[in-house]
Image (cartoon, rainbow, N blue to C red; front, side, top):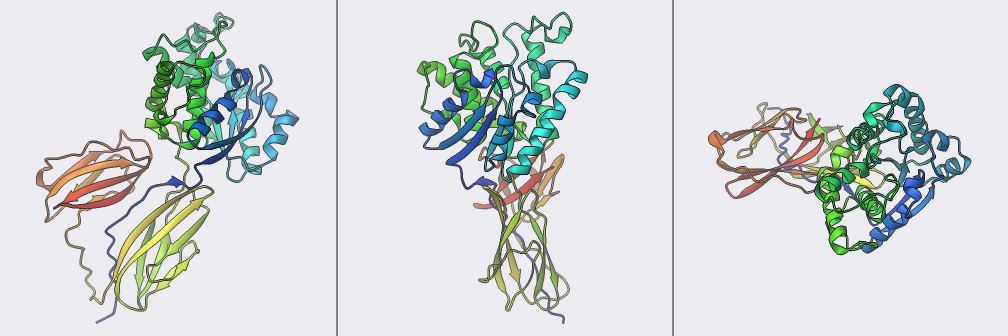
Length: 421
């Protein structure tokens, strides 16, 4: 009988997380929408109230465009200082809402060139686009030549779309300040976000922006913020609630976390107790393997030989700058024949990665409940009354990212990490 190793994988745990969440640095490049009320300083004050630190610098000439920043020696030199965690890019307030042909000529190329320079001089920086808002009653100065901006909703929807396009095409993130403003206008209409010019932010408008930037950069629940700036406690709390609903509860909608590392691997058994590990991680720069027998490796896809049979937990940490993701798979090395037996009592979860439908099936044991958790700790209500020990979960409605499926079987919780493509 040939000696082989049977690989039983039955626990996959952990999600992406930041290991440097208490201190961030950000460069703000924009214009008066960033300069008014000193938005970066409000953001830093919010961070301080949460025992976090935001170090920042800025260049915000009035009326400036991304094209202007792309040749401005001050902006370029600040980018090339390096070591930024975030570089915030804010376009002139009207330009992204113009006809798509003009936007493709006057906006998108300069967003791309600035993002390229950011990546060249800042290995770990994330470009963060500052989604601005529609003017209070639309853009009267351009209404006659471009009717879609005649109303707030028309102008705001175009700004929303174009900033999302810039982020998606540059693998960047969005701080959706404009979307937060829209929610506040709809749900808390007594909060005036605008100055008298119906364009620039009031104190409340800048506070909404600062809460959005803090939440985008630190990925923490804005309801925990205690700093009210100059606002009444009620208005400040309502603004924070808006940020939680629009931004924190849907981080992936704004690409926040989308480009974090995702750890994953498979294992193939060869004769002589040798296991070939195939690293399937994405968005990572370096790796830390622990083979569960006291040995480690930093090779991308190592080959490891076990000296004896037994149960081993293989841990892979995939790192990229301040973020990492960990996956742990249990390996049982036993003397076995050609036939490999399945680990009894554990359900089948497939396909993984998933696109539309995820199937969970238990052959012998009753599934009591299933809960779905995203990488930011937000979970669905548990699903009970599962018939025939089988359930299909519709994943088409969920954004791409990492999820944990918790399966309860006979008082035992089994976790499975799922990647949504």
